[in-house]
Image (tube, rainbow, N blue to C red; front, top):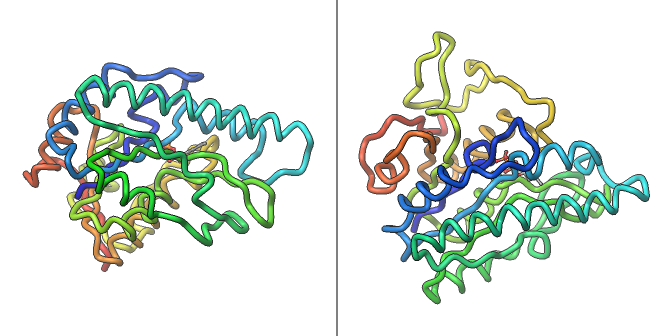
Length: 250
Ligand code: IPE
């Protein structure tokens, strides 16, 4: 089976407030469609998630009464984005069904301590395509935490044992110091120049890559590809050689 994350930077305009990239997402749905028999989709938050979660400081925990309204608002915003993603998938006849992650995940101090993955397998067994997303969740130490789509990729890979995991981004992959695309990055993170986004409430590129290294370490083939270049997602799903970065454990 294939496990694909549609990054928030691809399905939304990240610098703007809640703007969905409908054309790009529909094109990506078209590329996913041939694989709908064995597919699970995760998506990120982009401009529907990060700026709001950052404003209410939900990644730092629940300390003030007004954060409760913020928690609810971020969740509603993520549901709204999820609805749009589902519609794009349905427009290509993909039987996509939403499984919100919050009730299935327990977090403690910002780390996931348990995950119930059974429902995803049951939906897959029934021929459906489960779709989940990064969201605000309860944290037993801090009150709240932000669970990223990348965290979900690792958790789901362990349960679903995909042949390939693909992270669809708004860049071709990871670039080296001279700006050229690195076909492979291995776990010596310091060599990779990382641009950090201060609005990112889920640890930015550094955490994203360390989750991918963990996935590679556990034996999952892990690719980063551009969702803005037509045909790349489909090519990667077909196992063809497309411009991308493979994340390897070394
Ligand atoms: C973020 O999920 C979810 C929220 C901010 C609520 P991700 O961290 O996976 O989102 P992207 O892909 O980086 O936008």
